[in-house]
Length: 589
Image (cartoon, rainbow, N blue to C red):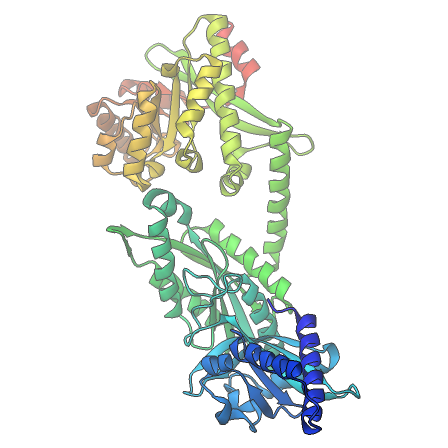
């Protein structure tokens, strides 16, 4: 970037030299060395990559260089003697130029974005630096403007050449320019008493697409999304790429608040259409948060923060959702931030406890194993249930160290029970979606087994039905690797997701767990009973065993036993309990 003080000093020095040399030329006192220096200065002026414009104190153009001509299309003869306003695009109001002049007087400089117009009529966005030129009496004699060639937008404002200001992949401005544009737009909206909106957009599951289809597919997806976003907004609006999968849209001078919702709906609609990526048809979902000026804030920081809170709320409420900001969202955001801080602290200080729920073999009534379930024993808040912290752990990535802790603890405890009671108890451990996608998953599993000396056949890993169907090819590859280690695999919450029988047949599944929602009314709801019987029949036809979850009544257990369900778990037998209590109730007998 331009060093402002250095440039000012050089300009002043050069002008003083030219002024002195001009006078001496007149007096025929200029030496050959001075003539050479003057010629060198002219060469630098003409050959720098930055466009340079010199004006007098009234902004009448005195001189321009060759780079100025390249950028604007105007040559020396076109503009010398004319006011610099010849470059005006018409996109800025008079107050913009008034503020520019005031900045020059107060601070001795002005730097920022300005829309100008080329000789052929095309408008372009330009990063401009202007410095006053003072005379010997300290009065302003003129101005020097520098058009930095490294940060010029092309004709349709989609390609900045400086990565700090522009995303080279999508051709969209970055977060740096978002802040500047927001600042300018807020000032404009305040003066005109108009409404503006900021939309923050997040592409859900973008990392999964990168991990499964590769970065080339991910890049192509972002480019197509950019094109679709442009079709949803007006020419005066602006789109920005803020991160890997996050975008922003500024809607200026909207007639009413509902206009922002209309744009959000258009974005959700057009992005719900399939994307063709390297031979694959992919669907994505988007979460959108909306904040408005004036109701939701009057400065850049507040508008951004509130749009972020609204976007997070949209993500919580499900796929393809948009939310307007509400003050209560910040309260929730603060609670989530506090919870995340406490979650990290809990991992460091070992506040997580593994509980165990027994698995009962219906034919014998015996405990044959257990499922490991994590609990958080907070020193002040007491026991925190998984529903409160598991989604946040998944979102922040903390599920990876937490999941590894549960796996290792469960394997070690099961091995201790095996040695102490000479019983080959199995242990079931849940794998979250994020765990299942980590590259070193099989290594972590094998290390947990090795360190605990637990037989692989006693470990059963549970994945959800929906996880297994999202990317069948990757799922099959990972499951086969796990199965090759001698580990058993089960599908959890079966019947609640969207499954394909052809994929289920291909997966190396040992067990299906029927979701509690079907079991709870099995003894008096014929529909639930029919579903449970169908799942049992399907599983057995594929050589897969069945476990029913959420068994709370003897009538439920009797019904399942009568229809050949192998195992059950639920409050009829025990809630999840600490290892010591599990040992006393089910092993010390």
